[in-house]
View 1 (cartoon, rainbow, N blue to C red):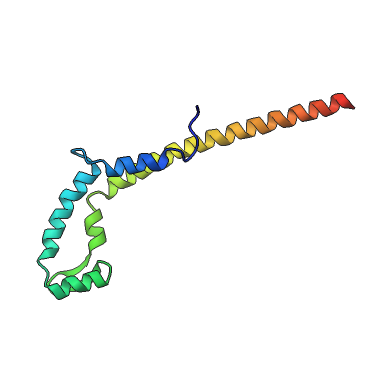
View 2 (cartoon, one colour):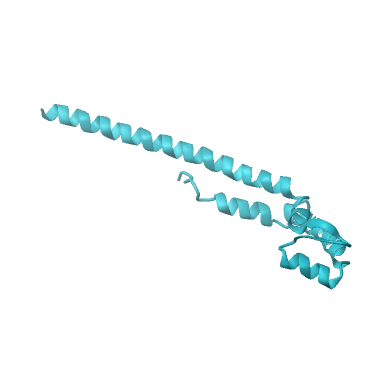
Length: 121
């Protein structure tokens, strides 16, 4: 059975990003996130609240300007990008092969119909 475009791409991505083996993206993220959590746990409760209210992108006198989303993802961003690229590159190759096969089948069918019509005339 041939692989169809979209059959396994999402599952591959979930497996890559969700694996908890040593050295995995998840483990790396959790380790680095713990450092960030410890850093931001030192904020005054009102400062913490301000960051939460502004989706993690805020500035306080004690903490300065920060974007929690960037801070948490920075250590694993390249790994995540590679995981997405790997899946998308594979999906594109599968898609191209499917399109080529569909075109080949359409041309064969058209050729057959044209030949059949000529033999009837």
